[in-house]
Image (cartoon, rainbow, N blue to C red; front, side, top):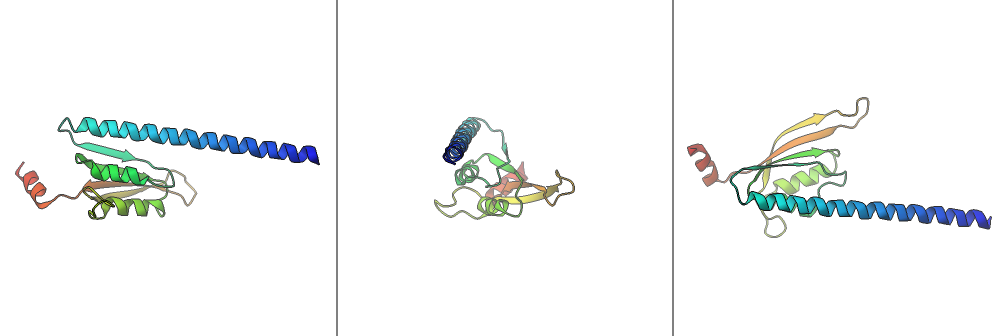
Length: 149
């Protein structure tokens, strides 16, 4: 009985250590992805090319700092959002991307959903992915300058 308890504790401890290592690795990947995104956005400030972002977040949705970065990038005209949770976190993320500017909480220019397409990647199940294209809302002056071009 004592040996079994020790073995169970050892197995639980090993599982917890493996889980913690996995979480640490994921956090490091998130930091690397955010650093790369910041590098791309910084590089885009030096040229006139429009940017398109494609995001495919985990079930938990986009991190608030990512939503903020997307809204704050002035040259980022289009966001393509691939959601594996269209009835859950996608709704909140879409709201955060599209809601009008509100000081520090929602800085930057909001987006407008243009088109959504459900994609059945798992036949014979209730699950589907949702691909949605968001574009920036144009101000009156921006839309007038675009029509002149």
